Image 1 (cartoon, rainbow, N blue to C red):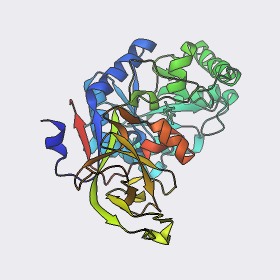
Image 2: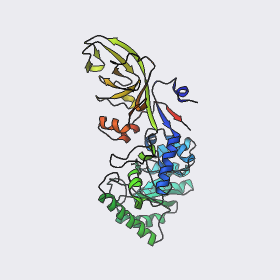
Image 3: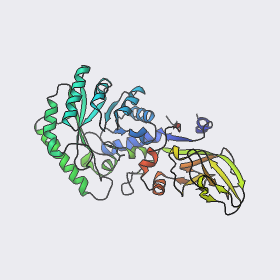
Image 4: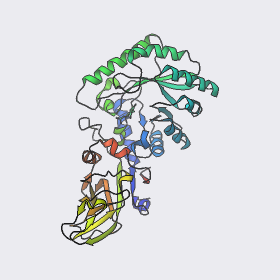
Length: 375
Ligand SMILES: *Cc1c(COP(=O)(O)O)cnc(C)c1O
């Protein structure tokens, strides 16, 4: 099926190129020579949780990383059979479900780990856990000096299996190398201690996208790139190689085109008033889709850059079509992606919105259909 056959009934949607996703994942795999955990938290950074996880699994990525157990359960309901690690906190009350669904949990607190063990015992099974070390992120995890004793303790809990040990970098996407170097040193000390007492877990992992692109010493047994698998740069100082490309486009349509007289106000609060008679278009996209309510938004219509005017509404926004005599109802509008010779990148939008590219794509609302190309 061609794209337009899949999208002709839609007003506002997100297109994802699965062939390019596979290329991105393979490139990360070749670069690191390690298994790649596809990080699919937050609806796969807006790209669609189940479809992205399934495509990554089909391309040979054995692991999926999510932030919460709810996301893991959604994957299991979507018939995802790969290994899943919950990277964030899981309440002990949910540990039985995690055990039964064979989802691995992150642990960094002894009381919680003991409660997990009890739940797993009640389920009559073993729960796999990955011990999180805070080597410098200041977020989840045990301090490195607590790591060895903690893992020793867990090895005494009959229904927990310490399957992994991991840490997360705070500054791996920056030219400043000291912090990541220090984090690696601290983490490595824990890995060494565990090796010496024969308790090194099977899966030791540390590298996010920044780590995968810039720090070979961080590869261990697996890498965990998120933003890079979606083809986006971890930062303007940590760029993905040329073979890795964005896989997402965001599109809507012109749903109204009309001429309005000089002095006419546009939208809530009349934040824009026509200084001359003008052709004004309405787009079927608003802040509830993730199109931020800021001034200065730009879209592509007929291959040209067009300014959004007035306040962005919940489901719609307005554009000036001053030099676009051919613009008509139904025309495709690109919010992110390319049209003709023009392109709007997630990085460009991030600058406009005062944020980072992750935030631009991860907040694309679930109500917009995702259309998968080259599946
Ligand atoms: C989000 C996340 C990742 C992926 O991070 P990117 O910077 O998008 O590559 C890896 N590990 C953990 C623990 C995370 O929370």
